[in-house]
Amino acid sequence: MKPERNESPGRRDHALLRKILLKLTATSRILSATLVVVVALIWYDALNRLLAFGNGIDYAGNRIVGAEATALLQRYNPYFWGALVTLCSLLLAYLTWLAVRAILARARLRPVDPGSFQQLADQLSGAALDVLLWAWQTRDEPLRVGDLMTTRDELSAGRAGRLHRAAEQLAILENARQRQ
Picture 1 (cartoon, one colour):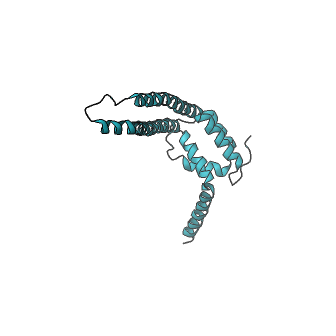
Picture 2 (cartoon, one colour; picture 1 turned 90 degrees about the horizontal axis):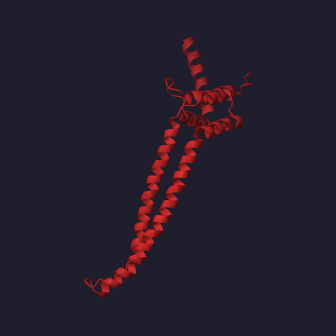
Picture 3 (cartoon, rainbow, N blue to C red; picture 1 turned 120 degrees about the horizontal axis):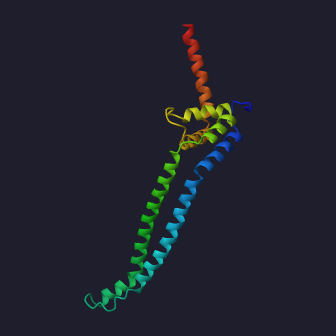
């Protein structure tokens, strides 16, 4: 038996969408978090080795450039290695961010399983179903996780009220058209 549908989406709709989205994206989120942790641990080890290598360089045996240049190299050596580590850290963070975005984008394209779809159909309010139908643009494709994410975001942004006002305005215009 279906619950009674009210006109405005409530906390129950948000909670249901959040629960289903968490279930459908858990693997991608865990994979992303694992990737970030593994990259951070490997980079931390490589960073320490790189800084130890940089600090171990001794320019005293370099007689070609002279004593002043050798002293200058020795004094600015830690700054050079620090800048190199910072640049590599930024590059690695950017590449990791791109990988996480790709993982999450792939998760958005996954179709919603039939059990979750049935739960949504049975338990969402009428207004939330309207927003879900609005978010599901390509009806020749199955409902995807990205459509549910759009529904969640649009419910929070007040899309249900805007859809209701648009339907009212359409009805008024159609009545005016019929009278003419």
